Length: 139
Image: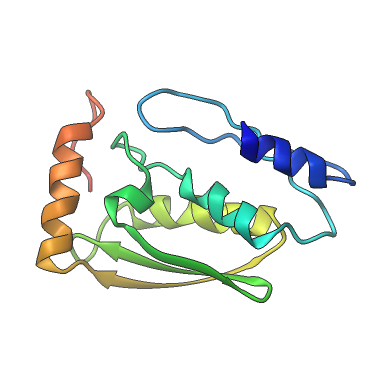
């Protein structure tokens, strides 16, 4: 709620809305996007922190998939760490972060790598504890 109030306070131009899921509940968060004006670095990073895995009730950041994210000038720079090579849903994991960055007026660059064994173990523990019922394990 505080994030939304900060965004509203900074908005002066046309707005559009982005819908995002939050953890185990479906919560609609309306991120106000300002056209022709860059949003504050902290706000875009907080918004990206809410991006959730489509099959796991956890954020990409909590899972370790979004292992690094920062803003360098007008570009969001992210590192995605996957538990295995050739993840079939990697575009579905990277896409929402890219869309959020663009929505806030930032360019987007990313790198990809495979998780270390320790990172993979942590990911699998969180995955198994938070799997959304009815979905096949896709990573």
